[in-house]
Image (cartoon, one colour):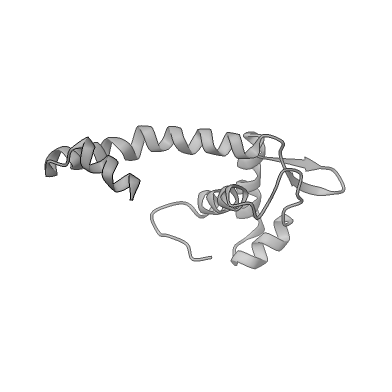
Length: 116
């Protein structure tokens, strides 16, 4: 995993795990890597991974089963989709709309691109 300089590493790990859930690599109830395993795989301090896992837990995306490890929560996919949709609508879409207006691109042109 290559990290970007403009975003905290724990958030990048968080988003990476969310992406794996959305892409089906991890399904509901699946055990995910332990903190130590993930830290070794991505080459970071276990405390950084733990911070990511705590964030995932706080949003019920993963659950900690004592003695078993971390598992994907029952509604993980829906929670992630809702969160990412909200973030897109509030942060990214306004910027896209601004550029569409600036370049004079109509909704019809956008619809046509979406159909192709």
